[in-house]
Image (cartoon, rainbow, N blue to C red):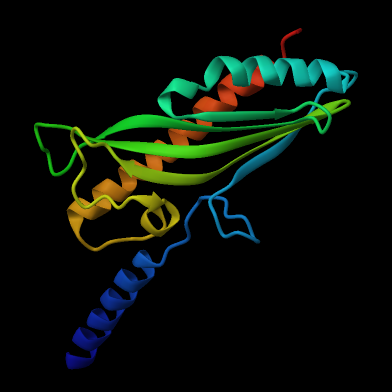
Length: 184
């Protein structure tokens, strides 16, 4: 009987420990160890100049310099880079007042004849001064979203930040890839 109880206890502890070290489904760059989404999209027959014009039009329309975002273009190299942010509301423990956080990230694109590539990385959190989220750190997001806290409230907040990262990436890919299919 004691053996069964001991095995049950050990199995429970092992399950709990393995649940907290489960694999994370975010793509990590092997060199930087940062969450990085990247891809190469073929556009057979599309010249570099056409793809660059499409990408530049999109970057110019999407990035808002007055809001602290930045954008840079290098037509000769066929590269574009921008830093963008999104505001997100977080709910903490059923709080009636949503807490706001700001997710910043960097988008890079490069074009060649017949293809373009993109990279989304350097995700970082910033406190929203008017209504900051308690317990939410500022800075690179990897330390926060790759953690598996035991505390219920922090776990919910971590899951919300994961969803915010995924939503930002999905939004970028939907809009950018849709734009790159158009004619300049």
